[in-house]
Length: 225
Image (cartoon, one colour):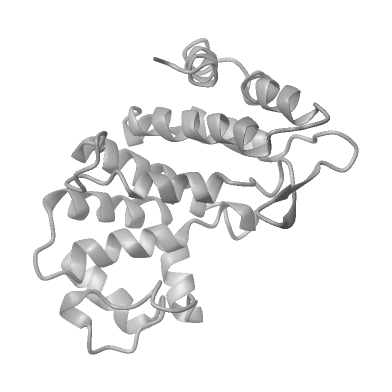
């Protein structure tokens, strides 16, 4: 069953509604839930992010500009007086911090092709989702909330550092360079790292003490394109 949010988002894009108007229509149900005394923060926000991810999956990556414009408009919306809510014990701002969007993207990673979940994405959907996140990440130098580079690293690792990479991973990895190549290069030169083993090397590079982006790793990826 299609959610109200997905129906609204799809209709707005199809009718070429302006990004701000489309954003307000998309987030209206969430803001209604968040405005109640016993507000259900996750119940309000998750359907918004889920609809965006699902529409991204079903939109060919070359045609995602309108969707990106709507998401940019969502991030610029103001909610209530200060828009602050508590998520997992921390204070975040709706909508500028995009609360729970990253968590929703992480959930999508559990549906990667070949994962074996009940609703795995197809190879083309996986490429489209990665392209969408790469498009957003390309905006992160000016809007840090759009930094989804960790997911890009995971896709690039699966595609170019695994012993037996899949064609779906390879296709998804290529769009990161297509839409966010400059950011990947910048992060590599800066040596952006992640905690624990989040940014560790893949099975073919397990001996490397990689913790994130670096110039050597970038060369490995570029050579494999």
